[in-house]
Every structure is written in C-alpha cells, then in structure tokens.
Length: 572
Ligand code: ATP
Ligand code: MG
Image (cartoon, rainbow, N blue to C red; front, side):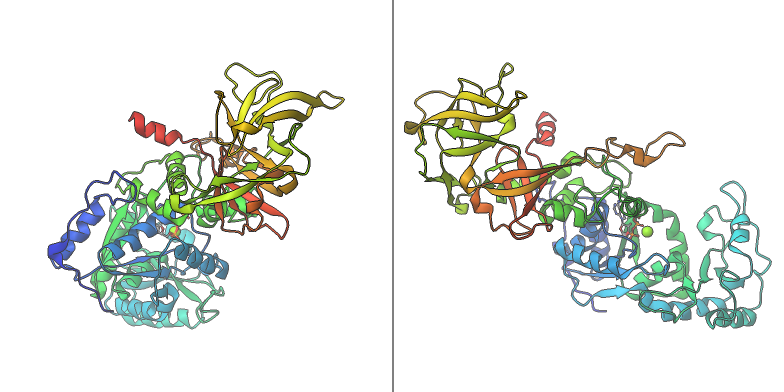
C-alpha cells in the first residue's frame, strides 16, 4: 500500500491547548513525529480495529479520535478493520452500526474497509510457515488442560507432551484440522515459545482452535478460527500499519506480537498503548452494555442514556462536541476516570455557539391575561441565537391565553423567589410584563390556572424593575410534544464498584428517565425533524427523537444548562 509522505522538517508538536479544539501535545504525537523524522516510517497509516460484537461507545470515540485523527493530522491514511475472529458473538447489525457511528464522528475511510476474516487464508499460510520453522505445533490437550498447565505468575508452566512433534506430523495434523477431520476443541495449534516465560502470553499461546460455527462473512468455509492474538498483529502488518495504537491491556501482548512478526519476517508496525477512557456514572464494557440491552434495563443500544455513540447521537450530542472532548482529555499511560461533567460541558459549549433558542413549556400551567383582547394575536420578534447574529430572528405569537412553566409559579413563594406569585410582576421573555392577580384552584386546592394582567407599554421596555424573566407559549398556537428528560443511568460515580455478592445493576438510577407527555412548544418547532437540536430557553439543549411521528413530536433533553464544569474550571 502506498504511504503519503509528510515533510519531516515541518513536523512539530502542537502548542498546549487552552481553547477548545486546540490539539494537545502528547506522547503519541511525540512518537509519531520521532518515527517520521528518523525515517522509521515514511508516512502514517493507522487503523481502528473494533470487534463487531456490540455498538461503539464513547471509549471507542477516544480510540477513533487517536487512530484516525492522528493519521489525518500527519497526512496519512487510516483503515477501518473489523477484527472479526470470533464467529460466535459477531453480528452484521454491529458491523453496520459501527460504520454509521464512525462516519457520524466525521471520518471517511474511503475504500480502506477491511476485515480480519479477509486474511484467514493468509493467516493460515503464515501458520504453516511457523510450523515449518518449528515455531508452532499441534497440541492435543483440551482447553482445560492447557489452562491447568499454563502455570501462574510465580510458577512456570508445564510443557505439553505434544510440544516436540515433528514438523511433518504438525503440518499434516494442522491441514486435517482445517479439513474438518477432528471434533471441536480436540486440538489446537500453539506457538512454541517458552513455557517458563515470566510473561504468560508467551507460554505457548494457542493460535488456532477447532470450532464449527458459522461466521458472518466466511460462512462455513472454516472450522478452525485464529485466536485474536494471532490475528491482530499480522492483520496490522498485512495492512502496512505504521502506528498500531491500542489500550493498555495489550502492553503484555506486545512481546507476543513482536515474536510472531519477527518469526515471520514481515512488516513490523509500532504498537503504542494508552489508557482507556473511563467516565464517572458510566459503564463502558460492551459485555455489560449488552446485558443492559438484553435485560431490557434500557430501550436498546441507542437509548439516549447509553454511553454508546448511537445513544449520544439520539440524545442530541454533536460529533464536534465528542471530538472536542476526546482532544481535551488527552492521552496518558495511566488509567484515570474522567468527570462526566466535562463531556457535558463540551456539548454545552458547542450548542451554545450553534443551537437556536426556542421557547418550550415542559410542565404547563395555563395563564389567562384578562386585559388582553380576545382573539388578538401579536407576532413578536425573538432572537434565534444571541451568540450568533447570523442566526437572525423569528416571530413568536402572543395571545390572551398562554402556558408558563408550573415551576415558575408559587402560591406561597419562598424567600428569593423572583418569578410569578400572587401580586408579583415578571417579564415574559421577548414580550411584556405580566402580573398575577388571581389563582384558580380545583376542589382539592391544586392550582389549575392563573388570572393575570399585562402592561401593554412594556414590550421591550422596562418602566419598572422586575427581577424575574420567564418563558411562555401561546396556548392557541402551541405544538404539543412529549419531552424526555434524562439523568445519569447510574446513581454511583463508579457503578462497578460494588461489595462482594452485590450486583452492579443495583446502581441503576430508577429516575434516569422522566417522560413529560404534555409539553407545549412554540409553533416554529412544528416541522422539526429528528436530528434537529435547539436550546429550550432556561431548560437545556434538546433534540428531536426519531420516535417522533407526524403530529407527535418527541424531544430528548441532551443536557441541562447548568454547567458545573465551567465553575470548576474558573476556580481551578
Ligand atoms: P470493551 O472493553 O468495551 O468491550 P473492547 O476493547 O473489547 O471494548 P474492541 O472492539 O476490541 O472493544 O475495541 C476496539 C478498539 O477500541 C480497541 O483498540 C480498544 O483498545 C479501543 N477501546 C475500547 N474501549 C476503549 C476505551 N474505554 N477507551 C479507549 N479505547 C477503547
Ligand atoms: Mg476487545
């Protein structure tokens, strides 16, 4: 494969990033620059190698941001490769969702889409090469026996009685393994390395197992499947990967990958490990996320409470916010936990710049303006985005009957409550001053309606000082919507940290979803389509959910407006 050449003289680390979007200098950038300057590689080719056994989550976004983002930065190219060596757990659904999610993040791998399964034949030939070199052998021990003879960190392993099989016998048996002559699990191909190695990965690891399973791509063509450790490094090599960036747990596997590559004498990528992303209030393992989906704890992989990219997308996150987050967290060699508030902060910053403001009443309380003429409608001007003059203005209808937020009214206001209460005056956003004159209650004493009066001389003018501004929607023009509010999926910052015998799922937040079926939106939102995001003034950023049907809008709250992270940043 051809490698684009960057000019080594122009390579330097980015400056320390303080404003959003500014790249961070970090050790991976440093390594890449060094390699290019010293001519170890003439360009950069990276890959993102997901196993198609679940949907991508925000941790994967970090990996993609590094793999693909760095290749782009250094003028290289990148491959999307499905590491589909395990036929049992993989599904086409995952292959498709992964591509959709990577594309959504803003990456285009062009024609560089690969599957480890495309290399099954090549890997098989490589394995025969190792057998011929006396570096691999067919072993008749069961999986159980292999485990038992592997030894421990303090005790060396025991050599397999089949370790010294002659090459010809190994070749013959391996070919017959492939031909389907032996039952599942009866034999394996193992690398002949060192049963006493302090690194357990080097104690004659299994390279192939016999497994009659239908593969999502190769069907029933194979009844032996390569182990991940055998497939991964060679797949990187075949693709000419220069920098194979992966998470820390593969650090101990690197000597094995190096050994295979050296035995085979093929292109040698540089593997670089980094600490995976952990987030507070979040579980990231695909296995555990699958459990939540299977047990119906959430409404699918793309449930807006899930840390999956499809969940974030549905909730209203932008790819820009996620990439900004990935850049800001940087990379390190040491595991840490990132505060979920930082991710939310990145979204707020992005949407603050870009999202239109709209008025929406989530829990409506009816207001009748007794001195406003019946049947009259005024179209008042409202600014779409104070952060973006180019976003312009829109007209919002004002009439005699409005809805306001239930929370914006108190019959008996607590101290410092500056919103509406009997006798008090507030500003209606983009409109007039409004005074509450009378409260209408039902038989049980619950407030059902407010009788108010407005001051016609106060449109965009404030002859008197009022302390509160509230939003509103004209009842006659309101668009009804269902609004879904989300809290964290777990109540504990470290959900997996549970006492022995306890279930991590006990940490699920019973209030993670709150559905408000009767929200009232300003009419400009009538035609909003899934994917549309805006700020509901004073409430947060919201996005249209794909569950929306004609005449029945559903909005998700992506994030509230309260930014505790910005406060932390200021203090720090
Ligand atoms: P999980 O542990 O969530 O099941 P995985 O590591 O098994 O994930 P893969 O499909 O093998 O998932 O991951 C593809 C790539 O994404 C790998 O290079 C892996 O190192 C990386 N990756 C997975 N989880 C994270 C994470 N939390 N942070 C950063 N990178 C990650
Ligand atoms: Mg994995």
